Length: 174
Image 1 (tube, helix red, strand yellow):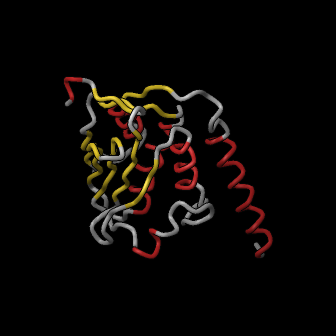
Image 2 (cartoon, rainbow, N blue to C red):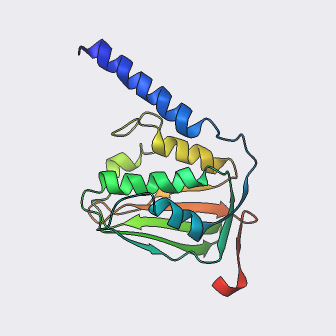
């Protein structure tokens, strides 16, 4: 296949990817989501018996677009796909002056300092180049931000920050 043919196939795959998975961005109203359930349901979709999932989000709810499930799924998928030797993926939370930070981290190879600056730019990446870009767009609907703060060689670490008023922690989880 020549360069033009490969480009046409790539464009076709990107259109199919975005149409199938993300055509509903912003269409449905945000709702409250039980984060532990969202993560457990997303993790269950992977056949990865060698990976231990550590989910410390009981009682934490976030106000988010219904596509939050795609956000979590994509973060897990990226860890398994690009982390090379991932055996652990953790989800936890902490409060900050900005709001509630949900942390998704793994013990893979991490992300280079150079790549960190481009992660959320449309077209950057090893597959469609849309996954992390669309994750950021989905989260932005409710004012949520995402950054990658991991150390190269020690795993990726994504911090998703929900502003005050966009999360709640049930009393038993405090």
